[in-house]
Length: 109
Length: 109
DNA sequence: GCATCACATCGACACCTGTCGATACTTGCG
DNA sequence: CGCAAGTATCGACAGGTGTCGATGTGATGC
Image (cartoon, rainbow over all chains, first blue to last red; front, side, top):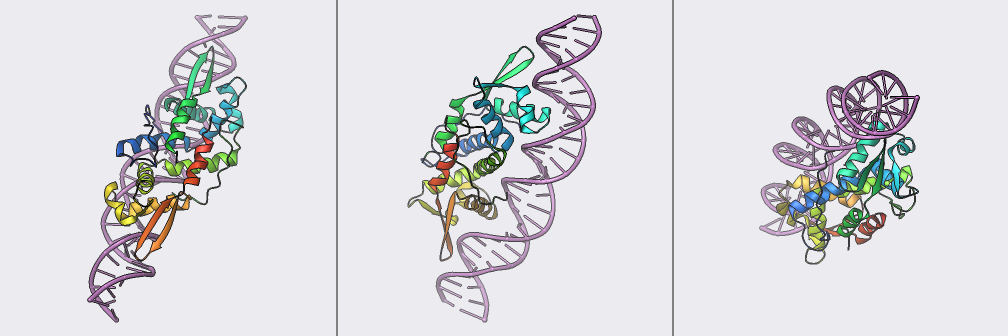
C-alpha cells in the first residue's frame, strides 16, 4: 500500500452528502485500518507499558516476518496513526489518538 | 469482496491487546468502509429524504455502472451496514446506525 | 402472453496488496 | 576500522478486488 498524507475532513458521513474527493481520502484512511496485522500493531503499541513499543518487540507476537511488520509500521506511520522515534538502534512507536478520533468522528450518527 | 456476517467485538482497539480472530473480524468490517463508492453510498442514503434511497437514484450521482453500484450495495448489506427492502420493482436501502456505532466504538481512545 | 423496466448475477480483465527472502543501510561496540 | 544487531528497502509472487459488458431474474403493465 502506498498511503500519502491523509487529510480527512471532519464532516460525519451521515450528515452531509460526501464529496468525491473527501470520499477518496476517507476511504484511504479506512483502508489503513482494514488489515488485521495493522490493527493488532495499534493495539499492541497502545497497550504497551509506556504507551510506546519497540519494533523488536512487535515481530514475534504477530507471527510475521520482520520485513512484513516493518512494512505495516510504515503504512501506519505515513497515515499519521503512529509516530516513529529512533533511539539508538531501536525504533519506538506511539499511537496518535487524534488520528483515530478523526476517523471516529466520521462514523458519527 | 466477499463479506460474510461480521461480528465485531466491542472492545476498543486501544484498550486491551486485540486477539487474532477479533483483529480479522474488525479488519473485514473496516475493509467494507475502505472504498469511496461505498462511503458515498452510505452518505447518499443517510442524507436522503426519508432516510432511505432507491437504487435507481444512486447510480447516476456516483458515475459508475449499474452492476458496479449493485455490487457495492450488496457488500454493504451483507456487512450489516444497510438493510434492503423490495417494494415493487424498486429496492430501497436504509443505513443501520448501530453497525456504524460498533465500528466507532472500536476506535475509542 | 409479451414487452419493458429495475435490479442481480456472471465472466473476464487490470490493478492493487500482503507476504517473504535477500540485501542494503545505520548504529553501537570492541 | 570492522563486526554485529536492529530496521528499512527491493524484487517477486500469489491472491484479492473494483470495474464493466453481457446476461439472467422478477415484477409491472398493456
